[in-house]
Length: 546
Image (tube, rainbow, N blue to C red; front, side, top):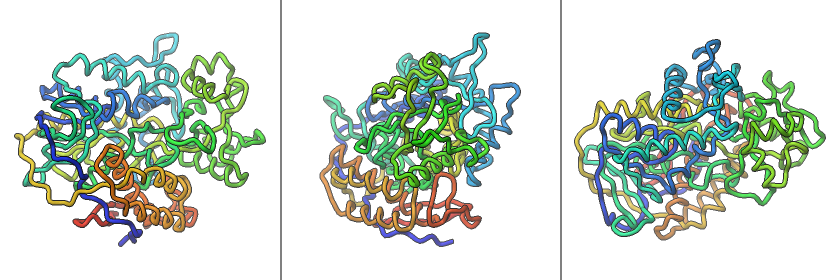
C-alpha cells in the first residue's frame, strides 16, 4: 500500500538555538520523570550505573501524578493473564502486538508488587487484601488504586522518595530537551537541552551518555482541550522524528470520554473525571436524564474508551450540545467523598456538587497510543536510544489503550530497558557534526494549532476536516521565530501535529480511537501501521507496514 501524504510544510530537522555552553557526562540520561523515567532510573542505579534524569519542570509535574483510575494487573487468584491479554487486544482492535501484550500481562503483577515494596500504598479492603476495581473494557476486577482516585500521585510520591534516597541519581529540573546527539556511526550518544537555571548550567548545554532513554510523556497539548499537563508538548516524539527514529500509530489519540466540562472558553488541561467513577456505578445521561450507552455496547458506560467517547460525541451532535452528564448522585455523598475525593474537589471548585447534581462532562485528548516505535527491550530504530511510557509505541495498545494499562506499561518496559542497558552499555562516543538546517517556528503558532487540531483532527475526523487542519499547519509552518522555550515547544507541537494529520488523513477507516465519519467501518486492508517521518529536506513523508 502506498499511502497518500497530505500537503504539509517543511519542518526543521534540528531546533535552532545557541551552541551548548556547558557539558557533562553520565552513563545513562533519562529524559522524563514520570513512572517510566523514574522506574528506569532506579533500576539502572540498582545495576550500578550513573544516571542523570532530565525533567521539564519539577520532578512531580508530569502526567503520572494526574492518573486517577489505577494500575491494571492480574492480582486476583481468579483472574488470569490470558483474560487481561484478551481485554487488551479487544480494545486495540487488531493492531496490538501479541508478544508485547504477553510481556505486559505476565510481568505486570511482579512490577506492581515491586512498586509496593518501594513504598507505594494502595487501597485495601478491611481484611487487608488489595481493593481491586473494574474500569472500561475490563471483564474482571483487576485495578489497584490509591487514595480512591489519586493513584498517580501516590505512585509519583513513592518513586520520588526512592530517587531522593539515592545520591547517584542526578536530577536536572526545569530543563527542556532539544535534540538527540549521535556519533559517526549513527548511535545515540547524548542530548542537547535548555536549562532555566543559574551559573554554569544556565541556557543550552549537552549531556553526553552511553545510552539515552526517552520517557517524556504525551502530546495532549496539541489539542485545545486535554487532560494532559501543560508540559505535554510532544517533545520526545518530535525529537525522535527529527532524529530519524521510527514513529508509528500516532493517529491513535485516545480521547478520555469524561473530562470535567468547564465551559466553551476553557483551554489547556481539563480536570479528569475518572473512569473508576463509572466503574462504581455512575451513569452517562443526556440533558433529559436518559442513559444513552445502554444498548450501544454490552458493557454500556464501561465499554472501551473510544466507544464511550464516540457515544458521547454522537449525543452532542444530535442534540447540538457541547457536553453530556455523568450522574453519580445515587452513590451518596459519603461514598463519593471517601472513594473519589479528588474528583469531588475538582467538581466543587468548578461549582458542581456531584452529590446533588449531575457532572457536566465532554471528551478531551487524553493518551497517545502511538509514539516512538520500540521492541520488547525498549530499543528504538536508533542504536542507543530507548523509549518507554507514553512517548513509546511498544505495540501494547494498538488502536486504543485499555484503561489503566498505561502506568503498567511504564513499569514493565522501563524495567526491561534498564535490564537491557545494564547488560549492553558501550563506551562513550563523541557527537558527530550536525549538518541539518536549524530553525524554529513562531510561538504564536500554538493556540491556532490547538484550535485547528481540536476542530479537524479530534474525536471526529473526515477528509475535509483533516485537509483544513493540514492547511492551517502549512500556514503555521511558514512563521519562523527566534529560539526560546515557547518557540521550541511550538515547533515540537507543529511537528507532532503534522505527523498525526498525515497518518489520520491516510488511514481511510474507523478503528479504535481513530474515527473517520467518511469511512465509518474498520477495513481489513488497514490492518497495519503508518510511519510518518521527515526526509532530508524536512518534508513530511509516510510509509506503510502491514
